[in-house]
Length: 602
Image 1: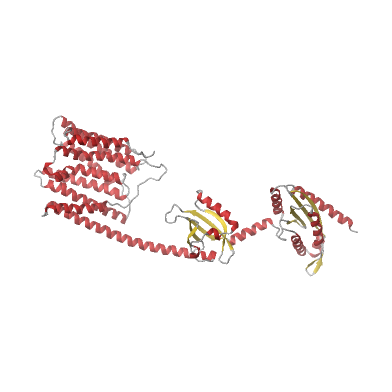
Image 2: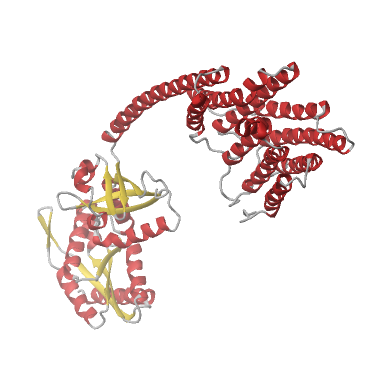
């Protein structure tokens, strides 16, 4: 459910209230109309508070508060309704005890709800909350004293004095409860609606007194109707506005009330100082003026206490911050991993481990591009890595690349990148870099062992088959296949031992490798059997077979003696996609040639 640009009910309440003001001022609406309008507004307050109590985006504690407001508004509606009926029945303009009892009961319920609402914060944070609330409360008390209590205390009737005192106490308790919730960050209402609600309550209790002070004895009944009516409309507007603002703009967005610094204590200080000046406008101070002066002194003391608490907290925070900096510096200085922050492709921060991994000072890395330090063959992999980060896989994306060392060589490093652009303190990519030289060497060695013969270092069957498949994948073409089997090798093994036989195989492998060109592959298939793959070569295969036969037949100096082996070489040529068939044909040709060699012996 999205917020609406304008709530029709809220607009109707505002317009209805504004339309009634001219009727009161012109005398077209009198006492009966005033009470009728207040009763209707009380019913609207019950409806609006009930909607808030059932709103799905209000927490459990907030719903309890709004249920209490429903009961309080209901009590006010009953009292004002009784007064309305009494007015139409000819009871005059005097307010009945029944109406006062119900309204006071509603206020007490609101006071209890505000005081029972859970308080946020802890420790010194709560102390600052109490000081802020006490500061604003003192300012409210000063205004209540000047505009209500001090005047009513001079009244001749005791009931007026007790009523004024009770009203002042209730107002102070309500203000205290509302301020407690606002400052704690746990209020079930927004600050705007909280302030409007406080103004509405203050207007209900102090409106007539303030108007009397401002306009004197010349104030008309029509003006008093307006003064009493506007706070009621403000309360209804406040409840409806709270309901409108509570609608989440984005259902997926996190909800909750955050504790933020408030300007209300400073407003209270300024307002109290201005009230002191206003009270002193007539010269000699009286009881009312001294009361305001006491309030000003008290509020100054509270502000000083608040500032002293803030200074202590700042000193403690600075000490903790220095300790954390030392702790972080000690960890970073002795860490073997390198931490790098990259913004817009440029290094913004590099940890001390840069000396250990890259042989450069961290300051030399700052302002440089890691792309220029990356091996050219690894740059496409880096581009893919960055694309993954920007696509949303922004947490712990690994890549292994080669970075240039200070000595000009390239060193393998493991890089784990995290996208921290959402953090305003970093606003870039955070790279955790670890030296991968030993790991990469082990990886390469294991890979070499998996694809190469352990004795001769030539390719094994796995790598040979892989090269055949690669030749087929490149498209149509001609390849040559040679299959080589040594003659007389078994006799060397039997006469001189396997160690000498292994040395013979190693020398054969060296001679084969020396005869091959770029892209040509020599492999040991097992025992004394070898193979040679000649991509893109057909006619030259037979000539190479003759050279291999001649070169391998040359004597070998092994263990202080000359040894000689022969070689039977089978040749097959064909299409690049016929590797398996060519292996079989070369194997058959090799055995046929071996048979002919044996038959030619005397």
